[in-house]
Amino acid sequence: MRILAALMACALAAACARAPAPAQPQTQAPAMQSSAAMEANRRAEASLRRGDLEVAALRYREALRLSLAVEDANGVAANALSLSVVLQRQGKVDEARASLAPLLERATLEFPAERRAQAALRRAVLDLDERRP
Image (tube, rainbow, N blue to C red; front, side, top):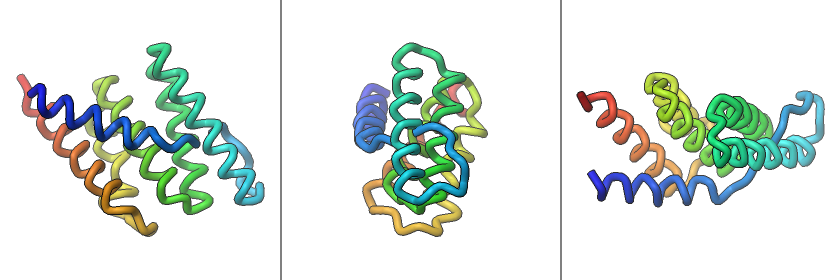
């Protein structure tokens, strides 16, 4: 179990290497949306460090939405993975699994193999978590 925790920590660290941001209207230029996605990601990470899981989840969702809007594959992957971790910590395992869908099921973007592997690892961790008594 310690090995799994270490693998999960490594995957999370790699996933959080990219920083996206807060809600902005859909009519913004892609560069502004990308910048907004990075800011939402930074705010989500700050909320997570403070232990405010509700706010962190909201901000990761926003960063994910903005990253999807500008088709930033790395941003989508980082935010989906981070959102999955937060949702799992909240006990929302089904939502945590669903947050990985942009990487694993509806992959309309070209994700690096490393990001797909991280998503597969997260899904395996969620599956193990569900089986725990």
